[in-house]
Image (cartoon, rainbow, N blue to C red; front, side, top):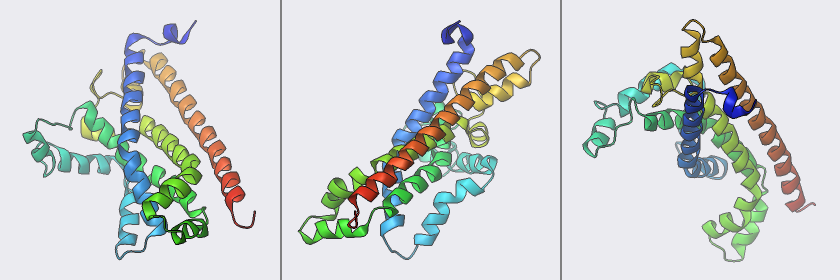
Length: 237
């Protein structure tokens, strides 16, 4: 029996929607994640502690609270949602809203991984390039970015896995509409609420575990690559 036969059409629809939501959540937030991580790792500014707290707030708050805050802010009656609605953009109870909820929950893990990889790079390498007349952007592109690429990939992978497993914020902000906003966790919950749904729920649980374990193993591998690469480029090496 192949994977195509193992999962039914509704289950495949859920898996593909979850992959779609998680993919776009990471693609959209990755540039902001890199910028935020670099600011926290290298810059000193008055509200740095506040920014750090806001970035990690979704990890501390109950996911349902995060989802409710998203609903208040990006719902059609919210301060940002009402403006977006004027342009025909609706996030609440849409798959695009699921992307936003997944991105918010995955962002802290992504930033933390990238920040640690930036902090592992010796600032003297960047300073040496700057003394030769290179701009900050040029130094980042040619020196910092190649060294932290494994960290960026690790952060993106962890963020992707977190987005795949997000439940509380997603179901609060966009509900669980089959074929539209029902991702893996909400589908598992829905299957467990109906008689005979345990089999379908178990299949989706297996997929969730495989994705999560694969992401952890791959991020660990990339983490070791970061350590070797930075050690190989250190002045003492």
